Amino acid sequence: ELKVEQNPLFLSMQEGKNYTIYCNYSTTSDRLYWYRQDPGKSLESLFVLLSNGAVKQEGRLMASLDTKARLSTLHITAAVHDLSATYFCAVKLGGATNKLIFGTGTLLAVQP
Amino acid sequence: SAVISQKPSRDICQRGTSLTIQCQVDSQVTMMFWYRQQPGQSLTLIATANQGSEATYESGFVIDKFPISRPNLTFSTLTVSNMSPEDSSIYLCSVEVVRETQYFGPGTRLLVL
Image 1 (cartoon, rainbow over the protein chains, first blue to last red):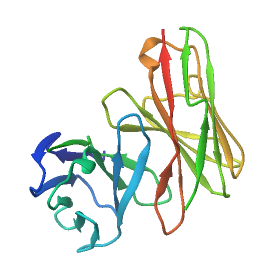
Image 2 (image 1 turned 90 degrees about the vertical axis):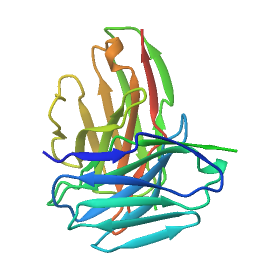
Image 3 (image 1 turned 45 degrees about the horizontal axis):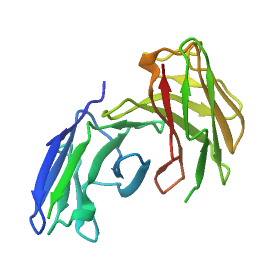
């Protein structure tokens, strides 16, 4: 059974600081997703990582994928309050299912 | 991309009743997915709904409790049957756009009293 673990579960950080969220998964996969969820809202797609060594950046967020280590990271640079949200990674199972297994989520609170 | 709408956006229901949630997509998609997000939790896949075939349910979810319809390539419904307070959750539908990502609907917030 595929398991997806994120850490930390909760992250409180000050504006201007850098931090990394980690996403470990237990079996091989050909695709990894990062989503953002604001309170009371649905999920917003941030990144899709397709191959080993993939790196994508959007603003203050950068995501990377190491398929050999079964690890993805979401790095936050110079955090701002607007980044406060819950971040989920999700791993796509191979084959014809196309289904996603979600991580536990990381609640990020950026303090002024 | 894909724009997804869900109805209702929220509801408060009495235990023992059933609620049908609708999911409409602005383009034709092969696979639609239904997820549940319990309060403060991550997302759990309920079932995959393909047009023209029976839905495929994940472990712990059964058709009698969560019947799904998929009459065409842009629409699906999920019914939560014989509800109990433990069914209080957010229910989200999603679609996969080939070579893009999985897009999620706005969710249906269900409270069962």
